[in-house]
View: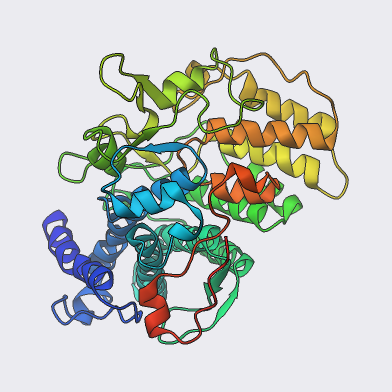
Length: 435
C-alpha cells in the first residue's frame, strides 16, 4: 500500500509544478500522471490523491502553509525581513502598492488553493463509488478538510473569489468562499453521520489528523469569519479541545517554516516580544506564549527567532488550536444577537489563565484573569489581543484585523492583488484593490 501510494504521489505532484510554472488556466490534467482508472476508481488511488492534498498544502516552501504564514506575517507586522534579496518577501514587508501580481508567494496560495479544490472535488465525487462505504466516508471527510482550508485561504486574502475551478470563471464576494467551505464541511459531516469512517482508513493516511474535530473546528472558524455567530458557537462547542489534530512531518517531508526560515536565518524571523502588536496591546513579558513562539539568540542577530510550530524539522503543524476554539466561543457570545458578556469573560479567562501544562500543544499564557471593563467594546479588544498572541504565525491575523476594524496604519495591505497568471488567462478577474 505505502509503495503504491508513494508512486502515485510522485505522479500527482506534477500538476502542482505545472501550475506554478505556467499560466493559471485551472487545467490540472497531466499527461504524465497515472491513468484515471488507477487513481480515481480504486481505494488505493483515491487514498494517494487524498494524501497529495496534504502534500500540496503543507510541504515545502511552495506549499500553502509557508506562503500563508509569510504573506500574512509580513503585512500584519508579525515578521521581520532578513534578506531584501528575497523579492516576494520584500514586497510584502514593504506593503502597499509594492505588492503586485508578480508576487510568487501570493501566486502559490492562489494556485495551491485552486489545485486542492480541483483534486478534492474529484475525490469527493469518486469516493461514493467504492464498495467499502466506511472507507469512502474517510476519503470524503479528509478531502473536505483540505478543500475547506483551500477555499478559506483564498477568501482570507482576496476580496473576490472564483465561483468554481475552470476556464474563465466568474467571481463572487469573498464571503461566498467561507460559505462554500462550511457547505463542504456540512456535506462531509452528513456522510460521516450516515456511515462511520472505517478504522482501516486512518492507517492509510498520514498520522495526526483528528478528522471529526477538525471539521467542526474549521466550520466554527469560517462561520465566525462570515459573521454567522450562533451557528459558529454551536460548531465550536462540538470540538473536543483536549485533542490534538496536526499535519505531521518526517525526515523526508520536513516542516516548511523550519526548512526555509528557522534553519537558515535568511528569510524572516519574529518581529520581537510584541509579536507584532502595538504597545497598548502587546503581551506582558511574563506571558509564557512569548517563550513558546520565540527563542532567543543572544549572539547573532536578530535576537528573536522562530519557535513554536516552526521550531524543528519535524514539529507538527496544527489544523487549529485549543485557544482558537475557546476564543471563537468568547467572540460569538459577545457578537450574537443577545450578547452574553459574562459568559464571554469566562471563556476569555480560560485562555488568559491557561498554563502550558494544561494545553495539548503546550501553549499557555499563565496570566491574571481579565480585569477590564465588562463592555462589548472592551471585551472584543481583549479577544483580538488574545487571538493575535495565541494564534501567532497562524496566518489568520489579517482577517482578524479587518473583522475587528483595527486601524489601517497597523497593517500594510487590506487585500491582495490578483496574480498576473490569473489575470492573463481570465477576463473576469476583478480589478485589484487599492490597498
